[in-house]
Image 1 (cartoon, rainbow, N blue to C red):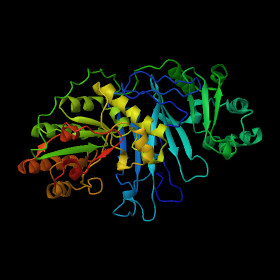
Image 2: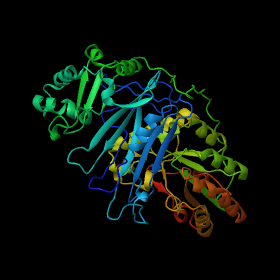
Image 3: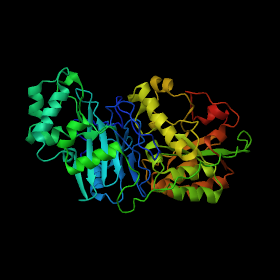
Image 4: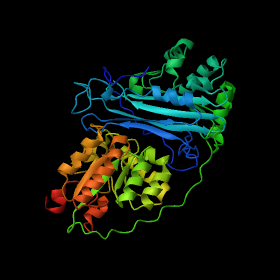
Length: 486
């Protein structure tokens, strides 16, 4: 059963804890943890047909974003992950202005990491942070798929059926002496009837050690924080099930081939050629910059076909987690003269993060874009346009907002979106659209045709500003300030 967004608990999910190192986006190689006790993760760009199923609000007063992988041939795991996603606010009785239930301000950002995706095992981690809780609010759960049985399995499936007592003993030993950990309470939390709900997060280090992570308050006093028990490989091996041993082997020697239907390796492509500088002088002619957020997605290719038909250039502010698995689309965007900007890794409200976490969101997305195109982006667009002093201090590039919001995220009506643009556009406008909404992509032909009839030239955001030097940390998006005219 899906969890609803309305309730006493506001859930916010983040991709990484500050103590974890994630995968290198876009690389076909496994990540290399910088600490021996960190979890092995991979970025399986070799899986043909892998899709990131994402959903976002675009309202700063009701920020939420969810994402999970849809893995061809692993339907049971995909279904499990889908069922962990909360219901969308607009599926409930919602305020039409914010998209949030009346009186509620849910802040959702659910992301994932792959723990393994080769041979005959897949592991996915979901990380959730609930800022309304008494503790740090972080919840991590890992889900596993056995390609032999075609079953989606919980973390406890990594353990042998008869390993329960020995596993508990190993965990007690690993956590012995940790501040706030009482051995009696720890054992009580791991008795068989509670084990499934307490032991939701098992994974391996690159050295094959078994790591059990526990949410704050699950096995220790809340002030003690999250607990992590590391069981050395030699002690862990007798505790593992057949699935657990195969998952451990993928941590030790990760492969780049997943034995699933349609999971053939992909062939890397060379970087896209650098786009040619624009010869359009937007001080003399009518220019408009169409921008598309939150992709790449299923309809991005169709959008690129439309832009090519009109000879129009645009700017794509991409989400890094999506970009990692759609490198072909990014290469095509760059090759066809479009600009690619950074829209964060997992679409969180950056105001809720520390400066280091903001930089992590941007750096990982930079890497995903560079892996696909050979170049890092020069522009940032913070999700929701949400900025505070921490964000300004952490961002070392110009931040491009918008001057014309089509509200296409709220009104899934192609005709209304088209009319909004044609009725309100001014020279120098930066128009906000989203290529993850089919109705928005469907509106683009009429938008381009109508604007062309009005004499507009279609340029990227950087082309819009021409030779004007954009200042790092400063926001741009008000056309009157940019061009001094309506």
